[in-house]
Length: 198
Image (tube, rainbow, N blue to C red):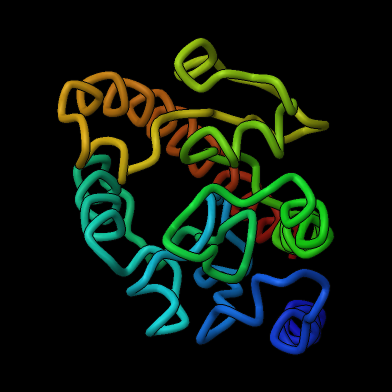
């Protein structure tokens, strides 16, 4: 998709906030450019900064396992973050940094057109649902933005720090899985119907 490529080039050259000065790489996002399901995290960690890819560290390995358990391959989804450069010492990005990077995320969503977005952690939920939401209060509850269903849940890094969060996070992903496969089936039926027209 040419527009997504152009957006990536723009992000790679971005100097809108001071995060770029401290980061090795810009981590734009990756995956299926026509994904029904998009996962949005907070920002790159050390390993992501080193490789220039999202969710490739320990939290990424756990996310891969969660997706696999749900019967969804990483290749069929799109994965990105709210901020594209690593905040120093993995601190939470400031509202100013989020605002500076926000147009990239909004445009990614606009171009990919996912039907479901999973907000991984508080920063993603506050960015896409509301600035004052608390992840512990809203996780597991569907939200809507236009035609997109949004599911907030715990960030995989939080599950590594606190294993008691694993069960509720898995319950959230089961809801995501059920809707995802229902939408996928719907899409396949629509594509088949279109084929019959010719």
